[in-house]
Length: 92
Image (cartoon, rainbow, N blue to C red; front, side, top):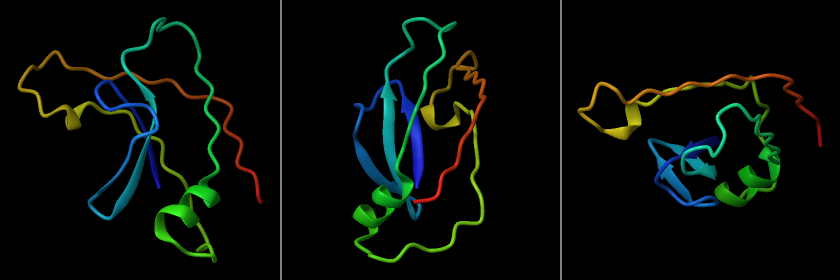
């Protein structure tokens, strides 16, 4: 599962890209870049629904990334910035 913030795709939109199920959690430019945004996701539920399975695989980790290379823009000023804190991973 891959969760993203997209400036173009609608919040809640889901799609597949290179063997990954992707879900848009936030859309558009942030109204206030100094305000924290909290996200909560149920990865197990999303995984079961997207892959139509009852049994979950054993996860081996999570990745947190910030990039702007998916914009497909020739403009070198397209930048992405992220700051992350207080992750909590909970069992079902």
